[in-house]
Length: 372
Image (cartoon, rainbow, N blue to C red):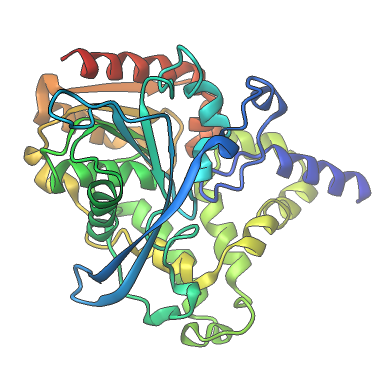
């Protein structure tokens, strides 16, 4: 049992936790750069007064935490021309982009060279240091949707950073859905959209069920107490495990838990850090933010050029549904699609393993946007 526990602990440290941002980064990735991109980021918060949500609910103050890398470049009219917005995944925050992503993206000559681009990343509503239910309102926090997340980002850019138009919006997973929402909500606000491991279609079918199960585990637990708990609900660890099962891939799960004993012990061990750092109410809101999302219904509103990047073995965004192909049919030559077959067994989190494969595609895409 001691050996099994040690192996599971080692596996847990190696797992790249896209959903949480508490990423156990492989040593090989960490050694690719000596730059502390989290340390050089300029962090601040922007407070919006009397923010009105799509539901009609209001907050007297909505706080959005954000960071920037690089410097803005302005044209002869004083307009910023090199701004790129990064959107993080579920239960994450801006630090998602400061480790494995930055190592392949932010350096000199790399796709998002921060000496060339003005890169912005915010904590979405309900995440990180931005306003969220666990700040004190619990389930009384306004029921925010993707429309609200993007609206707050738009105000942050315009009012705090003087960014009126973006070169591109780039997002991963839930961040990718933010990208799609940007495209239909503010079609004139950017030149390019880069959506990774995401779909503009609703979180329906199996994907909707993958949202339903962990939420039901929490809300059916008497210790949840309608969100007024003192300690995290007893079912919260099981809810996180259920969600994580859809994020990771079958091949990787077999690799890290090839025996019956290891399989039964793996999920509690690998999600332990998530359970300690997450909050059940925040998690519920982050699952429910997908309610009402359907960017494909309005896909004709998209004016920007689009780059879609998906993983062949992704159980959260199954390529066999043909969603990317349907977008291509609708948008025609304005859209391009990259299907990554490498790291197939890692499922959704293959996006962290394959940066070297798709990073050049993003670089080429941004270069074309700059030259157009």
